[in-house]
Length: 488
Image (cartoon, rainbow, N blue to C red; front, side, top):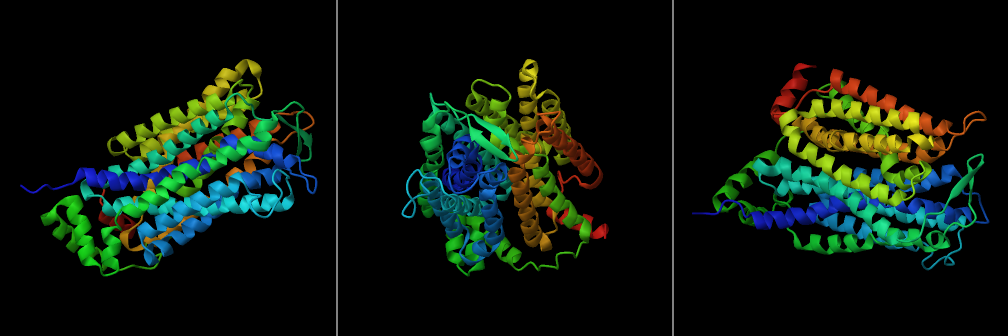
């Protein structure tokens, strides 16, 4: 009897592709452990003033690359193929890791912070961001196009798990690199300017942040090599007229008889027509964009990117350990989403997660800066992060993939993902200056204002989902097309 699915072969392919998701998470979260040492390094410059605004921009500069990469992903995936596009992403990750570790390479004096060196560092981070943007769009696409239809949703959802796992890995790597050393203590001296407190550990200022960025070269190099050994997706091979190669890949995954049937289905799908973006009205596009916007403006990346700073400012004695703990919590609650999204539905998880995030964010706003309430503040951060991980983190990606009609999906998804990265950049670059705002009467004004704002936006997000977002659980993609056509 013919074996229908070669699970070992399929698992190997998906595992390599999921490494792209892991690098996505690794690259976006590596800044969390490195940013204080990096800030202290550039505070020591003589030719310009390294303000909170510049630091916020530097911490978020990779996201500019993410916007570029996501915008280019469709073009590259169509012109070069899914596999070669992922090879390019791996090389960009690798170059970014080494360049961020040693931005002085070839052109600048080692260890001397200058404005030109800051520009070079940001260029390397943007290069890595382009890799993230490519991986964020093409890794799920690759997995979806090689996976059998009956397990496609589950396999694609593991890409989101890999992203969060990548963040946990880098939290732990940063913790190990820091070791017995400590992050520098930085104090505000007004007007968005800061100074390094005397006695801060010189190793973390000179070298610690470099090793953290450089550590990404290991998984990036491994991914760039391994992706060369996986096949191109059958769908792309059919698109470029290589039907026999496509049949060979399908046969290895699904068995010979089923492979012929799938190949014919792909051929039929390739010829499906496209329609103008607003064929189904403005509402579906608006909902798709706002799902991406809300996923970012609820503020989660301000926690993921700046966790050690936040825990340090809360008065925690070992902020890197608390960051690792938060990463473990994030992993566990991402699994909650993976195993319940088909049972509970998309809307209940999003609404529950929004309200949980609101409780957590408002808890931080009311307790931050009060030493007697440090434990409550830390637990509030954990509730805030965990609530995101079982809701907006994975479910937003699921809905964006499902909500658009077939004939406009490609263009609509590209627009929605671009908005996601744009607002990721806005939130990440604005966090440090907003968090450090002070008034004459309230030195903690920025702390409670920032998290109070995020908490209120979480409530708005819950109302948006309740009123406007349709439930897609159990509906076919064709049913979604009929839904939006009826609503015109």
